[in-house]
Length: 435
Image (tube, rainbow, N blue to C red; front, side, top):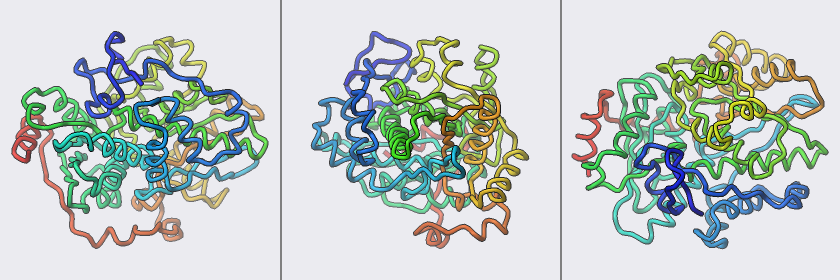
């Protein structure tokens, strides 16, 4: 597998180099030189395969011989050891539940796969691998869980102070061992900027072997394609072949993976991006002008991103053709009041308890269905377990949530976090002082 930078298509690096370096020096993002199209016969018979078998087929097509197929199969079996079921609310509306992994969020797919891939390649060297990650909520917990105890790695998680939920904070600050948490007095965009600056700092890179666990890392994007293929397999097993996926979108890595799956031959009728009031992409799709703004805090905190990094990957997939993009992606935006009402509606009408991100996807899915009636299945993604958002869900409804295993134990663990201002000098000093 060879990859180029979105800022320099003449650049070529190996998959291993892209995984470890995460961000090209020109500040682009790595993309596959060739996007393979899966055998149509495999797609036609996809309902016959398990999630792990589908994941192996997709990953091997992308990665090729950079990881031998037997080794790749072992990585997938260890990393993707939980399900992602489609639960139907009615005959034409389904929820793809992506919160059945150990951190109760969709990012377990990317974080667990990436940690195993990094561990696999790290066996070939003896220098400690420093993993930097910025989180707006769920990424931190997934990365902490995925990398905890992985030999040869150390993880530093930056999260915005006061802008993640209690459970999210507990998941990323109670680990110890090789996991460090930095509580940054700023926004997610500030955290993301600190991480990106560190990757391009020669002083830091002389002494630390840096890589990223954010969705800017290609090893996060690849496994997120798996559940789109798996959802389609589940639909096909029920005789459904036309689907519109609606994705709650913040940094646009999740829907970017869906679009990569689409380019690999997954038959998707349309994609819908649901956002909170951080609406940079919806405004771009309407006006053609990309105008990022500082992020605004909302109930759907994992989507509080003013300048989504992965949008450049999506534009690259479509060769910056705005008309083609508009033909494949629609987008809607919602505020907190609408989000709360959507959570109430899901519970009243379907007895389904959803997190704020899932509620936004539900609203966008419903709106697209009203604007584009048809016989397709409308599947919206549920990206986090509702237990992670006690402040966003009414106490009466929250009391009815069945907590996943281990959730109650988090509250009794001590918080291990270092407070830090949102300036790069402080972050650089921390990294060099703890090398």
